[in-house]
Length: 433
Image 1 (cartoon, rainbow, N blue to C red):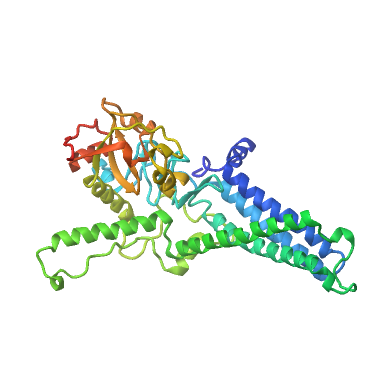
Image 2 (cartoon, rainbow, N blue to C red):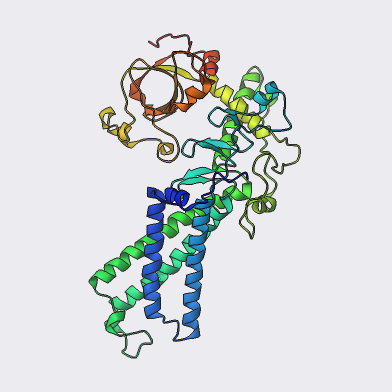
């Protein structure tokens, strides 16, 4: 099936996905909060004592089950991958394919609409939102609903735990001010000693921190769902508006402000209205709607490949503004390159820690620089010899590196496009004075 290779179907596959710092930390937090809160709940609200206590314990158990089940489904189902060698059946002309879709040389196929290649997963992901280290997988078409459910249930369960722990700690600390005939237990085993109070405060901190952090992520995802845009697609639309604005300014430079009018806006093809957008992800089964490849419902007057065509145009625009650089200082790809300065070591792009990689460099190498962030640059190595596109991409030739590693040169757009598409690096080289 389409999603078979993104799902963890065997115990070995599941173990490999769990044995990562993200899931291990997340599971520790979930288990610690749940176990410690359950202990307090069973002592202070014995379920056999009254129907209300039984209901209280049952509600908390249901919350814990929903948190664990949605988390494990989001992690083990995976996002869904585009099949190796995929190409649309309705497009047969190679020139038309190249003008409408991007080619992924690693997956040996075209990128389906709304899909993107994840360097961590090593595959093109259907409707990729982002690579989440906490589930050690991408959030995509297949697990988007389960991931959103987890973002909803986790803050609710943690908030419930925070209330229980806070009440028990408060009652313990101020116990001398209460009467002996209180309805709560007064036995020694129900009272907390110093270590138990410290453990309770640790549990309370984890619960409140999770409530705030994961709750904020839930509202971010809810906004994304209501607009039917992933985090990457928000970025693509912003770049599309910027590209159209630049094109509009260049075409109307000789006109007055009134004659030029407003620059055009990119029409996003998958915005169906809030309710239909919501139903595209959220349903009772939690399973995805459609195959995640080329059957996306479209807004009026929009085409199937409008977004992918815009991505191709943005890639060409990026190539026209690329810069050639020569490596003058080695970089080994270390996580904290303190030798390049404290600012370089501490102020790194966030994407380095989540999805994108660092690029190891040696003096004398040449590369195409397409992005900059503070003291860091993002580029792709140019190979001196004639090599195939597949061999070129198989080597880790793209990534971030400190700005102090490179010396900038001029580059023309034709050479940049050739380098970006796997050319041999024949670039006009004029050193900037």
